[in-house]
Amino acid sequence: MGITALAFLIGEWELDYTVTRQGNTTRELRGTGSIRYALDDKYVLFDYEVRRKADHERMGQAHGVFAWDEKAGQYRYFWFESSGAFLQATASMNHDDTLVMQWQGANCTQIFHRVDADAMYLEMRCPDEDLLLRVDFARQIGVRDGTD
Image 1 (cartoon, rainbow, N blue to C red):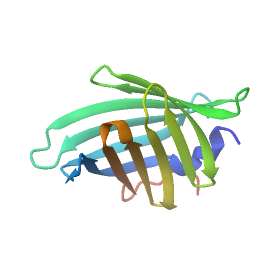
Image 2 (cartoon, rainbow, N blue to C red):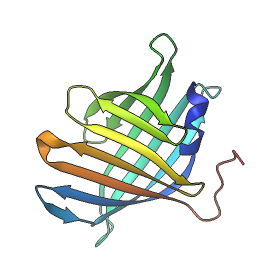
Image 3 (cartoon, rainbow, N blue to C red):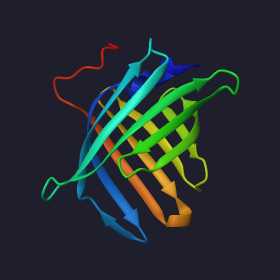
Image 4 (cartoon, rainbow, N blue to C red):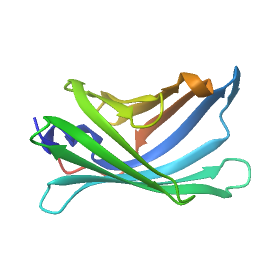
């Protein structure tokens, strides 16, 4: 185990959002994301920006840090948003291509699931908020992750 198990996340990504809240679904957001190793490959950083499709107005930015907690035998995730929000999660690998996360202080479960070398999705379910968020990740054309 360890941080190298997250290699499937590494890359430059185009993001396509589907948000379902209280039965209403919208697909009005797109974004870009960069996921990379940092500090001698001990951490994985996730930076993203999301924009409205219609007018390209920036709706937010965030920075995430994945760390492997050797003592607990699990991943820790720290999430910082441009809105000022800060969240934490713990996570574990379900399979070689699925990372399951539980957000602290919120009844939300999030997964990252690898579809193939150039695609994955993030799905977040928050039943208390009647929210389902799906973000489809497509590798940016011409950008490789360096793990091949």
